[in-house]
Image 1 (spheres, helix red, strand yellow):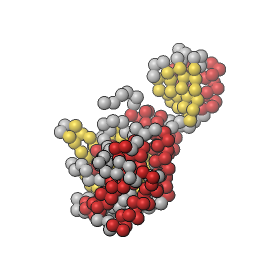
Image 2: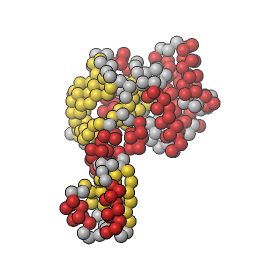
Image 3: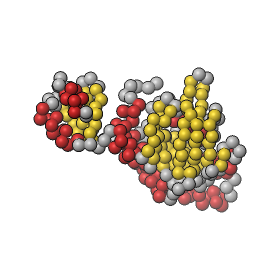
Image 4: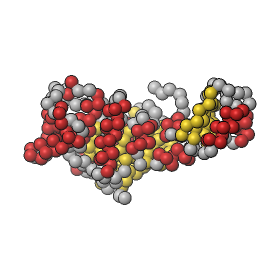
Length: 303
């Protein structure tokens, strides 16, 4: 595969605050690549530098093998961006929003009609084309924003928290559309706070914190490497359990009235705990990307 995005030593500061601290990564053609991190980790600043909204302080950035310092206009013509904020025009209809945006790319009128019809069908909005945007639900607006981002038939789609605030049905509907795009070979760069979304959609991802990359890899590989196959949650652990886990070298997090245990042989450990150590409550479940995220970035609340 060829690289669609090449980021090297990318850095951005706002006064004394360093938002992105010299990160490097590569996105290959046809893959869905995720940027994860807690609030303030630097992922939104990174993604905005990639699509040219925020200027870089230092580092190099190549998209489609082209230096972004010399060819931004041609690069942007090949990118579709679905921003986190709702920036649809509330005074226009669904169709008018698409037609107005198409004018920015000088798409011929006959081709605009063809693409609008196709995208309305693709995003299941064909019955809403004459509805005013201000009357749409959050899920319909996100589908319209996706349709708009695809109008110029981009080779790179950038999605900044595309399902934020959506109900489960709307999220799954949007996931289905993104799966279809992936099957067509479209390269996607995704930021999200939903770990199940990242685990489902991303081929590879990075987890950032405080402007730096903590880990990079495929979701299942990261889960296996950092937490194992299984997680056991123990409520109100008995006094000797911590010592036993430490003595046996079992990885765990101590949250006071709750222990989180990580294991590749969770069923055996679970049976042992039930017999001798779990008096209040004990739960066995598969490890997830959220476990990796919390282990690496911590469990404290962020501003």
